Image 1: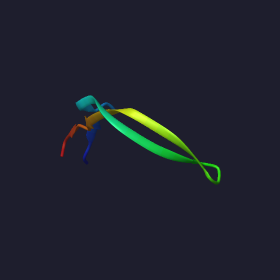
Image 2: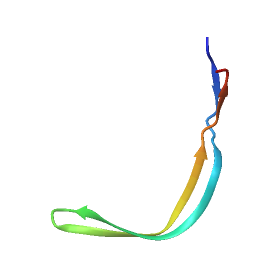
Image 3: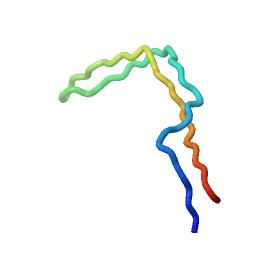
Length: 54
């Protein structure tokens, strides 16, 4: 019988804001488009740590 204990929280490895200009267009109706501009990107890298008997 094998068992392992897991947690729902991961360990944060990286957490930072990166400035980047991102422009996307969303289709609105048959011929219309709506422009979305985002100037900030939030980056977070998590590690899922699992421990137990293997």
